[in-house]
Image (tube, rainbow, N blue to C red):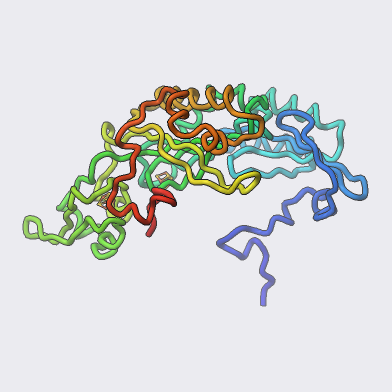
Amino acid sequence: MAERTWETIESGTPDPMPFMHPVMKKNYGKWVFHSHPKPGVLYHRAENGDEVWTVKAGTQRQMDHYTIRKLADIADQFADGFVRFTTRSNIEYMVADKNKVEPLIKTLTDNGFPIGGTANSVSMIAHTQGWLHCDIPASDASGATKALMDELYHEFTHCEMPNRVKLSTSCCEINCGGQADIAIIIQHTKPPKINHDLVANVCERPSVVARCPVAAIRPALVNGKPSLEVDEKKCICCGACFPPCPPMQINDPEHSKFAIWVGGKNANARAKPTFHKLVAAGIPNNPPRWPEVSQVVKKILNVYKDDAHSWERLSDWVERIGWPAFFEKTGLPFTKYHIDNWRGSRSSLNASTHIRF
Ligand code: SF4
Ligand code: SF4
């Protein structure tokens, strides 16, 4: 039987060992000390005295092959040809020779890749695919990310936040962007518009009916053709029916807005993991720079930076000051839409408003 290697496994996480810098592989599990000499640089020392510096740089994530080649050439020149990408699309170079650290930083900076994203900085935004790669987005999450990171450049390259700040953007409500200290998520505000001429040919109707989390979709006969209908009183405008049934169009240039959620975190360091909560809704989906989104995010970040104690994550800060103070300090309006009054909320009140299937 052929040996199973990372090349023969077509799903799941590949084995990282073949891609690891030789000094890291040699000292796997034997690191005794680490520090953070400056923003964007981490230092690790092993039991036997081996040392590794990790230099983290921001990228635009969706890259042409010229950029990839440039990053690869820099790896060949300084890091023995080894790199890794983080979940937030930062690129990390591992260097075993201290003398190469500063030249590597200079080369990356000269080529337009900022150094930062470590410790108590604002790291790159984990963003979803947007118009380039996904078939259901209502916006371009990657474009909104670029526009926002242009404005947060200083916070990426400096460690001036109370604790690390993780952001995410998502271009549909199904939200493959995940939890974040501040999450920017599309919010549909109108039920889907159905093209009844296409439903029978394009959609597998039972699976679309089953997909709706609030049982708002029913099979129906429209103009003599098998189709679907939506009970608009029940519909929560989640958009879950649109991927399996494109004739149920939910994206709308006016009624698909952006919403901002805060206080999510996956780590259990210092405090337990938390789900993010909605704080701003109805923000215009306004490409190509989404200025209204940037304005709200910067407002929250600035208040958090000024008001939180050292090492408080955004969720810890809100927990300490309370939600009324959060809205007071940020100046964001608290509206009836912040109250979860959905009749099925008994099972979601102490969890999240994420949609489950
Ligand atoms: S957030 Fe939604 S639209 Fe955007 S890439 Fe993920 S699944 Fe696609
Ligand atoms: S948008 Fe969501 S709630 Fe509304 S009909 Fe489609 S799946 Fe159901």
